[in-house]
Length: 135
Image (cartoon, rainbow, N blue to C red; front, side, top):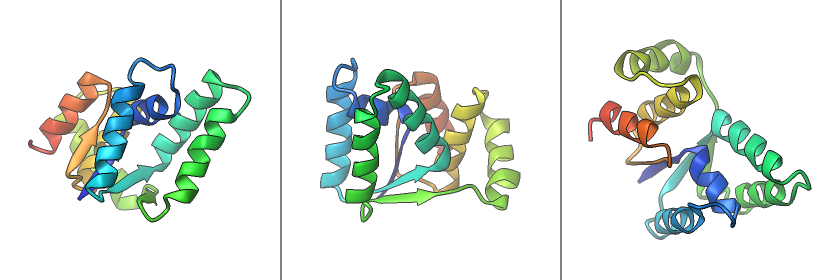
């Protein structure tokens, strides 16, 4: 099983005061139990890093995120955009869903890797992903 989590889920997972923290913990733990491979791409890494740092400039949350990526490198597959991704996948998804730029890129990665599970706390993005993935 392959899963992709939007930065909204990662931020909630690491930020205990977040309204969605408990839900994010359940999502990540459930994917671990199901031995899912988590696709983590450059855009979500950048966005999660930026938001965690803005929430906590002391770097505590950011260090937890980095530590997770190192400790669970067997579970997390870090990917970066390729020429095919930027020229074919993003173009296809852009014609299927009207989204903000970063949301479009995240959904495009979900489509590109044909993920089995996509989670976001952004309902518009979640619905667009389900539509593009035809679920």
